[in-house]
View: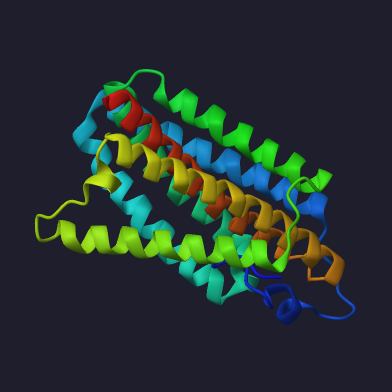
Length: 243
């Protein structure tokens, strides 16, 4: 049950399985993911308004949300039983960053936030349909390919971040040129295919009888992918508008 999502690894559900306790279900994961999205929208709306009224005042909220989201995510990965508390907190923290970033780009490129939201949810439902219909077979080779591609993307972003500290910018990562757009299209594609791996992992977890709290953990893992996908759509659209 390989997946490139660090929150969902091969033995995530196996290690969490406890005989004789209430188990997770797919509908339960869906409901908790919806609740997480609502919490994210709540804080996203807050920082969106902050940017509209006073952009400078939104920066601490955005950076605080970004840092808090990372810390909470790491805590959730290592302490899955905390997920009924940490998963909602992660959604609230990420909303602070996403709302501010979306508002800033919206001022530069009107309509970009709505387009990114539409593309994200459109991709979510398209990947779910493709998974349920068997259009995209989740084979071991497919999983390995997506894991490798996701790892490669992470390395590229890490190298780009380190080089930026020395005033060196990788044009294909940040620019709106042809290579920059093609790179973003590739990243969006890999992020979307990660959704398929997430769906498969969640379904397998329900079949294996993972404990009830894993519904929150699974919704958290799915939110990680959705947040990544949305941010990549924002980047892609901004690059296209830049041209």
